[in-house]
Image 1: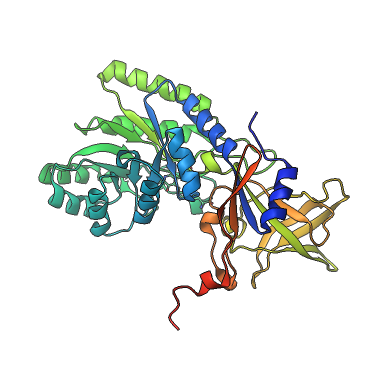
Image 2: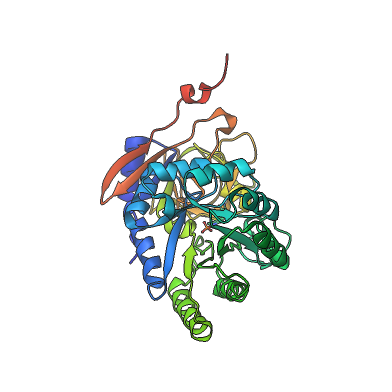
Length: 402
Ligand code: LLP
């Protein structure tokens, strides 16, 4: 059974550290990592946590100690990873739309480099020749993911080198001597359909025949986690079995084998995270009941940005009569966490819990309306530890030149 935090401990956290508050369950991160490692035990698979989902160094350290690698999209994320103790060979740098200067710095830091466009591949090859093997991101023209905003492998996406331009990759390789040690794809987030990964692998295996130095196929991240009560996550066990079967068959026919890399973000941390807010205002209007909480899309943007659904529970009154509310924030916009949501009756001061807040929650928070960002707490076997203090007015003013 997947571990979850009890309402009791969450209320204790809210009491002790106030709200709005992000709370992460260390045990659940362990559980998710083990589940994934177990699913891929039959093949040579390496997991690189996509730390854009949640980059608190305390969380990175947990994954580092579990043996995970890490996928970073900016040089600052790489610096966080190094600070958390990841060795450079366990770090992937997967940026897009950055200049050659960022890649040069990544070379100095000796991390794995994933190149996303032909122009940079050419510049990189001109500078480094065959001295620094790289991975190239392919856009496989596969439509996948929960919605278009988190879909990254379709023909119109900005990411990767189009699969129709592989001959140009090969030309650059020939001309500059750049060694391509891996091919990468990432088609989106919240991919329920395993066929997407299977088709992606099949495509990469076909492509691999054109690359003589290849040792890695990186299939990106994007496993689905259940957000709604009736939803199911990606069946990673089934995917692991299928992957092993495909790699064995490929080896039997070509005598070639690859290390497979995955870069999961949500799968490892989403369900480990809880967001706690306090009801400030109850407004019973002629057409709607509103609960106004002490947070807004400045702290959890997913509902407004992606129309994402997060389960919300009134953990202060779990047995009260059920009523229907719009749960809204305190930002001066129509910031709404949920429309027409059934909750146990909410009174001012009640704590509302948002599930599945570990991934892209705090990480996408901002200081809009000049409100401070929340604190973060890590729970390990019942012990609460503050891992980021709540911001203050001084934090908000810091950096401004008066
Ligand atoms: N690898 C690459 C190259 C990525 O771009 C991403 C996510 C991942 C791995 C990890 O994907 P995950 O396993 O977390 O689905 N903010 C959105 C999700 C955007 C994901 C961006 N890239 C959300 O809150 O739904």
